[in-house]
Amino acid sequence: MKSIQVNVPGGPENLQLVDIPTPKPGPGQALVRLAASGVNFIDIYFRTGLYKADLPITIGSEGAGTVEAVGEGVTEVAPGDRVAYAMARGSYAEYAVVPAAQLVKIPAHLDFQSAAAAMLQGMTAHYLTHSTFALKPGDTCLVHAAAGGAGGLIVQMAKNLGARVLGTVSTAEKAQIARVSGADEVILYTECEFDVEARRLTGGRGVDVVYDSVGKTTFEKSLNALRPRGTLALFGQSSGSVPPIDPAILAKGSLFLTRPGLPHYLLTREELLWRAGEVLDAIDAGKLRLRIDRTYPLADAAVAHRDLESRKTAGKLLLAIG
Image 1 (cartoon, helix red, strand yellow):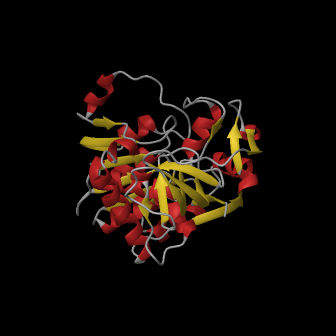
Image 2 (tube, helix red, strand yellow):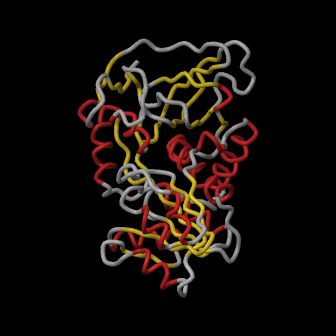
């Protein structure tokens, strides 16, 4: 089978298309013939070596396709099932062996591309808005990268929960995309200080929560944008890692800081089925809209990484495999 592998951590040019044997599922596993794979910043973190893994590695943390075979003891899925998954590395390939307990069945009318686009970013948006800081009517949130794949889904879910949404973007084109997703106010951080503008838009109070996937370049101003006892949910680092901080920085507003990750919000299969089910059903029903920006053939994974790192994309990037 064809697969994208990293033999030496580094730039996009280190993504190599190789032929390797098709794996076989072991106990509790399923072999999935992939049709589509999502492209995410976590893939870049593994490619560069920021996240450690034994080499060579096949990256890619979400995919959708058809179950080809199952190992001993598998009851969750059967050959022929249309499935999707996240947080199992190896989706930049024609086939992947995945723990069966991590697979969810796709609604009958949902295509593989939509399912692959929804899993990681959709469940991330779900845990942030439903669990990390559970939004309710009357709350105000600030969403960074509001025109991106995850940001756009956070905006939509926040609006569905009755919250007021402020979104940050870099260009007027992206501002329009954020507004279409439902952002009440859009802040061009290239033209003003977003923390000052967030306070102005809230009458000086500050927002209840900031959902921050950017990291290094936004961290301090995200804290400044919060109301007293507000929460900063730092769930990514597209601009780089935040340097070490003195916890006393939180004392200026008795602020809460959390660095959540999707695996800790999928601790049981029941929780997985709840989150994924709500996301996929909402997309299937038209209550949640995906914005798929670009789709690339598997062999062009390096191009996809360059485009994602450029931060010039607006929406989800996919690899078409099957």
